[in-house]
Length: 259
Image 1 (cartoon, rainbow, N blue to C red):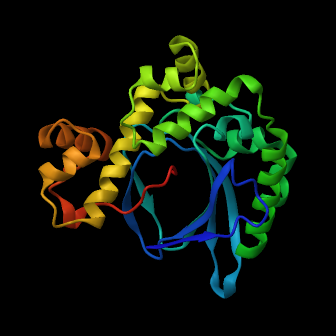
Image 2 (cartoon, rainbow, N blue to C red; image 1 turned 180 degrees about the horizontal axis):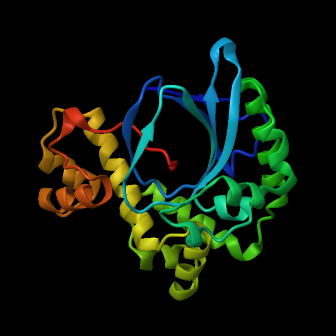
């Protein structure tokens, strides 16, 4: 698989995590794992000589379950991955309305309005990167951080810093926020319940442990990942990944919030 990340080149790194491309090169089906993020995508046909055609816009909502992505050898993806909690406000959409969904071409184009036009008219991959980057720069500059959102952003950061293992009560206490208010704020920002986000972050972190320390016992990895035991970890891996930790040689490598 040809997955590549480009320089953000001036994009707001507090709101945008990556500008990436994915060119599979052949027909295949890939497993896509939930990571709590949203992506703005351009799918296009690859032509001989470096030209592209038939650019279509897509917006992938936050996922809470794995999905399968079929690809063709003559198509590719260019995407912007927003940081958790920023996709909805930057794109001007309630993320919960597209949870486990993808907005297809017409709906995605309507949401971007005139910003979509130069993207759709791009004729080379370099031109597509430039037009997509400029559109996202405008979108992120429009998204103003409201004072009431700061505890939510702090809580989201703490979920990632602690690998999803911090209790919600502790999150509310550390951000000096009423639990009900914080739950509602995190759902509005992420599009997923706070507990679901924590489960996803814990799953992703543990998946990383499986890759980095393949010789450790599954019991040891489960405890280090924050699970009560190996059986608990296996249940969560089946739910969020569609596979078990014991399938180490076959662990999927796509962690992108895309199709």
